[in-house]
Length: 464
Ligand SMILES: [Zn+2]
Image (cartoon, rainbow, N blue to C red; front, top):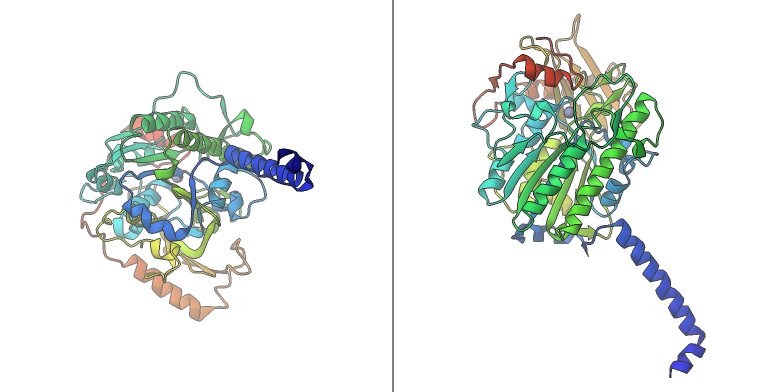
């Protein structure tokens, strides 16, 4: 029998095929952490998981269009690409503001900036607000938040619900991270401090359900290790180098989850608070305007199983939708009343119960305690409207046709007066919205010189 098999040419073909399949399988194993395969219909099963973990990775200052899943030509994020290829990508996603505190207050509370009123450098989220970490903690999850950005520090109310909410100490053995030349940023330490702390947390709590928030900062700081210096030395190149370096931090987190055999029961969500401008509209940095380069952010969701096909959502979605979505996936009650909606129906291919345009809002005078200079942006499927309401000598009104002008370069407001009127009405209705359901306006936190120094190290000019 064996002789006969060996004589048969089919045997050799079969062996060759097996070798190829084996080789591909090995490659898959190298490239992708071990999880089961499944499809999106299994989504509801997450809610039944008793031991689900949620890892929420926030990459500060990451604009969507510098990642390949959003069309970028440079391979800035091989690990996040692979997570996107086997997970969910929100393609037309909008952050609620273009600086960290206002944007993150919206993300966590699921409410628009005009509702939660966290608009200037002194404002803090009130105790009366219910934050998702409180819901996770009360449901028996271990909760930890790790950050380096002073805008999400304790004094601004972001610690609510986290059993541990820490800015990790700078490690003795620092990774050799460098910054872009002429960088205005001088924050000490680097994101490896966060990654190693996150790994320690996961090891400690691997046998209990946990909610872990890791807020990376090195993209904001244009900081990267030599091995990630793949794209040159110009300022914009340094930004891409920093994305690559952050991607390697994500790789380590994923490897840790795999080592602890947690990939099959962990929901990993990657998002950002705002993008970064490189003079597309004259400004460099962020916190100055609401154009696409600063409000269009990525969202990549890795489920506890591989999707055979990536799920790419092209509907307009917003950061205020993320926590309602994550809480529903975890089978937990939502935060009281949010402006954001759970995206679970949309992900399941069901009708979206609450589709609508996205709003972004920047109080342009955020670095001062007085004055009101709101800028409001509205993003629909194919249009982008921007209203600089109190701009002197007269308000600025912009309308862009995203089908032909994704870069928002040709203002067609003067040709589309009827549409502009409709958008103006929507923008005014946005500014007139009721305050958030907890009914308490933010407290103003007095910041001492040390705190102001930490915030200024992020490169912000605060007029104290
Ligand atoms: Zn930020």
